[in-house]
Amino acid sequence: MSIGRWAPLSHPDVESVDIDDVLRALADPTRRQIMRLLMTGGDRACGTFGLPVAASTLSHHFRTLRNAGILRQYDDGRQRMNTLRLDELETRFPGLVRTVLDAG
Image 1 (cartoon, rainbow, N blue to C red):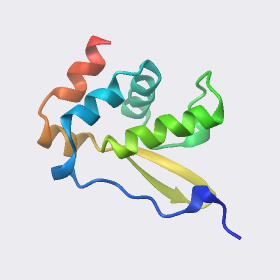
Image 2 (cartoon, one colour):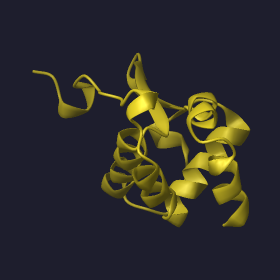
Image 3 (cartoon, rainbow, N blue to C red):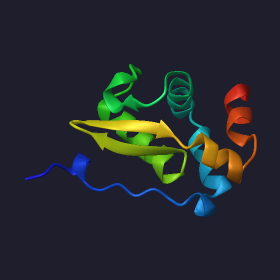
Image 4 (cartoon, one colour):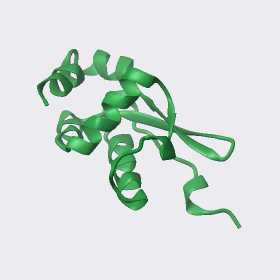
């Protein structure tokens, strides 16, 4: 029997990414920290962020970022990997993500 985390993931098309969803997702300091870590270190597995939150809370943050169209998740063997969609977001909302991250 497969476990839930290996269920297929959906990611919104960049054209359907809503600025309100992006801003709500980036309003949380933990999610901004996830973004900064991905910007400086490239793709990372979910368990490698070292943030002081419970695994279930971290999963919630990843799901929020994915549903907002900010990151893409994919499975690599037994790990769920995270990568930013920064180029796509830059095309949709020029300068927005970097401005928010620089501000807070």
